[in-house]
Image (tube, rainbow, N blue to C red; front, side):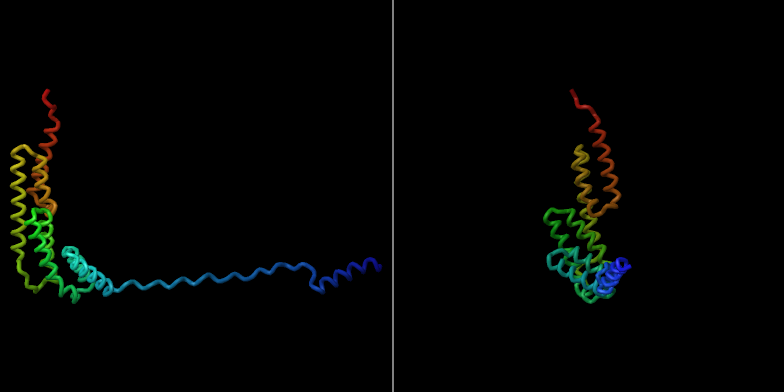
Length: 204
């Protein structure tokens, strides 16, 4: 009987002293991290001011066309933006002058692009009531005159059978006036003539 009680007493003693293995305690799961607060969307005013600042910088860099694009963007966000209202006409005047200088330098495509952009922005609300040294008729007249000059040069080349050269002249018109019907039709006709010419076998 004593032999049976001895192991039982020992087991009770070990349990009392905390020597028996215990179940592992699983710590509670940490709560998920809180989501970072989302930044509020920029206001129309901040977008407009940023566009205006970039436009003013472009104007300082001698890129009035880009400046007008950004000024128009600022005005769209905040109609009546004071900075745009103050500088829009000046940028428009510089763009027109840039076209004049390009023509004098023998760069018809650049001249046409500058005049066409000026004509487009002349009707912008930011230009309303501004006194400019040119009118819509002046700009349209410059564009028409340039297109006629390029058209005539292309026709001269076409009549001489120099179709590639003719196409090159007419494509200069399409660079600033892609909807010019006369130039589109002339390029198409000359391209067909050029393709037919290439199909003719060379003389032996």
